[in-house]
Structure formats: C-alpha cells, structure tokens
Image 1 (spheres, rainbow, N blue to C red):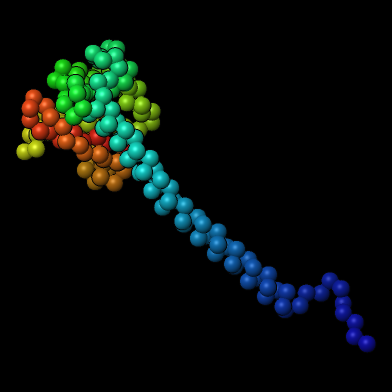
Image 2 (image 1 turned 45 degrees about the vertical axis):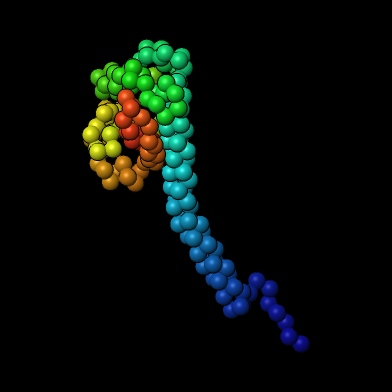
Length: 172
C-alpha cells in the first residue's frame, strides 16, 4: 500500500508552474511592446483628422463672423468663395500669427478648435515664394525632422489674387 504524503511537491508541479510564469511574463512583454507603437499611430491619425478639418475650414469657409478680424474671430475661415483666399482675411491671419501678440494667438487656437496641439500654417506660391509662415512662438525653431515625424500635415491648393498657392497645415 502506497501512501502519498500531503504537502509534498513533485517535479511535474514545479515544471508546470515555471512554464506558466514564463509564458505569462512573455505575454505581458508582448502587450507592453505592442501598445506604444499603436498609440503613436492613433495619435498621428487624430492629428491628421484635425489638420484636414482646419484646412477645410480655412479654404472653404468664410469663418464666423463672416467679416472676422483678429479681435472678434470665433471660427477660422480664409475663403471668400471655396478655394479662393480673401486677402483681407489673410492679413488678419498674418496679424494673429505675430509671436508678440499672445492674446490673438490664443484666439487663433480657439477659432481652429485646437487645445493642446500647436498649429503651423504656411502659404506659398507654387514656385516656393512664401506668402505666410504662421508658427507659434517657440515652434518656429522646431527642426524639420521633428515637424515631419511628430505632426500631421495637409497641403491644399487654392487661389490668391488669381495665382495658385499651396496652403499647408501642420498640427502637432
């Protein structure tokens, strides 16, 4: 008659516990390494959606109020007609981009619907001649690699004074 002793651990139990713990640690490692990459993709896609929305507003909408200026803007819009930029509104945007005027810059962010992101707006003729470089203070010095990898960019074509221009919106 064979008697098993209670409270004794055999080798099969130890091997199965070691295998279970090592498999659990490996699965946790896989989950931790998977989420940061997907999180960054989700963040960039969200920024792209915001950048696209702002480009739509700027080039298709007159803004609110329709004849807005840097003191009464509620919604950004540069168009007098879809894809035709109004020079008066462009001048108001240029004034709002002045790095020394923080209150106008805050109104620009609110009118764009941005809270914690930064906004860069560039408008250039197709030959590369710059019309507007609107980058908030401190962000104008960001290097090109940072802007390329940490922001979402949407570029659109419009007309300004019967000339074709490229409007680029960066949100990051």
